[in-house]
Amino acid sequence: MTVGPILSGKELKDGGAGFVDVVNPATGETVAREACCDEATLSRIVQSSDDAFRSAEWQGRTPADRSRLLLELADRIEARAERLIDLELLDVGKPISQLRGSELPLAARIVRFYAGAASQIEGAVKSTAAGCVSLTTWEPWGVVGGILPWNYPLVNAAMKAAPAIAAGNAIVLKPSVETPLATVAFAKLCLEAGFPPGIVNVATGPGSGAGHRLVTHPLVRKISFTGSTPVGQQIQRLAAGSLKPVNLECGGKNAMIVFADADLERAAQAALLSAFVNAGQLCVSCSRLLLQQSVAARFTRLLQKKARRITVGDPRDPRTLMGPMITRAQFELALSAIARARSEGCRVLCGGGWLRLPGPLAGGFWIEPTILGGVRPGMRTHDEEIFGPVLALLPFRDEAEAVSIGNGVDYGLSGSVWTSDGERALRMVKALDTGILWVNTMLTGYPEIPVPPHKLSGTGVELGVEGLLAYCKRKSAVIGYNPRTPVGWGL
Image (cartoon, rainbow, N blue to C red):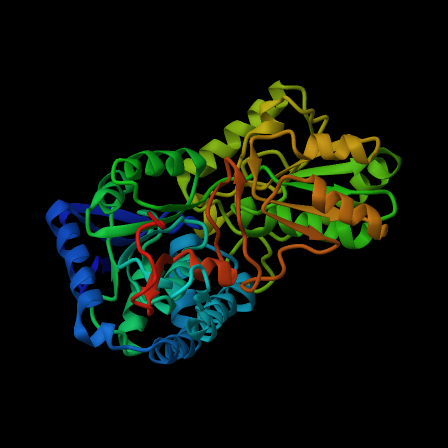
């Protein structure tokens, strides 16, 4: 098939900048050709979104109208779930159980959440001076650029489009060049749901082309990006010249901290889920596991036993728990990171290499679920994000050392603490420098809870009502009603 950009509700078969192959990571086979946008096509797409945003039709829509559109979109996501699952299987090779049981329902839930939040954007009235009334309101930015990662294409399309639309914006989605299929299908569903043409457009192609042009286009008023920290830094630099606001959710080297008094069985299950779901290609994955010394050996044996039961293989098999690396480049980076860990003196406790599967899967990007021991702060294995199915184990003596190790990286996206001591849990929540922290649970709370990244993990906020306000600009007005009131700061 050929997949191309969406312009005013129509899919273009040629974007002017040639074509790239879309590869199924489970088989290594090309499944589609992607038409890439040149500068002229990108400008037409952005202009279309700006025209749609400024149209009387869109400006006349109330929050209740936008809510109805989003509810209809959520219904269509659920009605077309199997088609979307097929596209994600081709695009990213995720296990069908993960798509059907988690990601498709989550995408619909995110859209429904922001449908409910569309009418909850509230300003304020303040008494600031005699004879005046002061108002603070929120307004849409206009055209927003939503730049998506390759690890969760559909969920991230919903995560950016739904709050942008609820706030009254138009949005141009730019999927990763490796995974465009579900994003283009999502935009088509928006049109089917009744969105005016142009309110949700799609620009396709590599980040260095279409992505760069989207960030720097003068009609794009705000950028929301999810991806790696180096690319996020580059986007922030590109946007700085026009002081364009940028929301970044970037990398993480997140720590899960297990104290001796924790429910070890449940904690082990959570550790493997966090480390190996989506083959570790998850920004909030806890890839560092800190174990209190008195239980470290027992917990490690429990992990190894459970890890051996993880089924890696055919994404279409409901029994499969872990799929392939989504891109060849990330597959090679993860393998080189495991080799580097060995050279640093780390011990491979489980997995540790390229997983060769038979038949049609032989050409896929498969890596064994890998557990590393002997990891220490200061090693690149400890400090740098791998973004693959690699879990690093470290011992700690006490609470103070756990905090020191947990905070001892440049990232601050998420974390998890496991303990039966409620006071300790609250101390750890206060002490750990992360945007979101789970206590005795993992990967829960979406979409209601905001995720505000710290340090090199990003800027701004995603999800929650706070994520909706991130797609609004604030405006203040002072209205005088007494002609005898002095003007001009009382001069």
